[in-house]
Image (cartoon, rainbow, N blue to C red):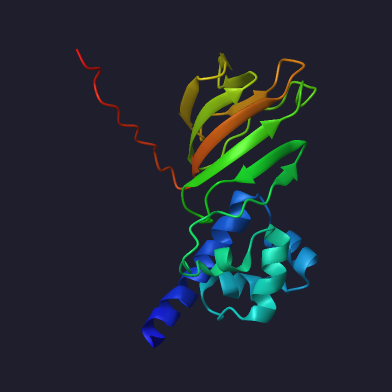
Length: 194
C-alpha cells in the first residue's frame, strides 16, 4: 500500500507541470493566483517536494480541475466524467476526459464570428485532431486555409503554425482530441462490406 501511495505522489509533479504548460501559465502567474511561492511550485513540479492538501487545493482551484484529477486518484466506481465548462477568450471548453497531461478529449464551442479579427497563427508542442459537430470552422494551417463543415475532420502537428476562426453568424461546435506530447490519433475502420 505504501509503495502505491508513493507512486501516486511521485506522478503529481509532472502532472502539475503538464497542466500548467498546457494552459500557458508561468510559475510566476500561478504563484500570484495561488499564494504559493515560485520556488515551492518549482520544487513541487520537479518532485523535490511532496504534495500536500494545503498546496493541492489552491492549485486545483487555479487550474479549475477537481482535486482527484491532480493526483490521478484511482477510480472509485463511478466512470462518468463530471464536465465543468471553462471559458477562455470567448470559447467554451468542455473536458470529456479526466487525465491532465495525457491525451485530452474536449468539446469546444466557438461563438458566431469568433474571434472577430484575423488571428495570428500559433505553435506549440502536440498533435491535434478535430471533428466539426455543427457550424463551420475555418482552420488556418501555415500557408493553407481549410473550411471544415459538420462531419469533417482534420488532424495536424501543432508545431505547424495554426489558428481558427468561425466565419459565420452561427456558433461552431467541435470535438477535439489533443496530445500534448505529440501523440497521434489512430482511427481504425473496417472496409465496407461488398
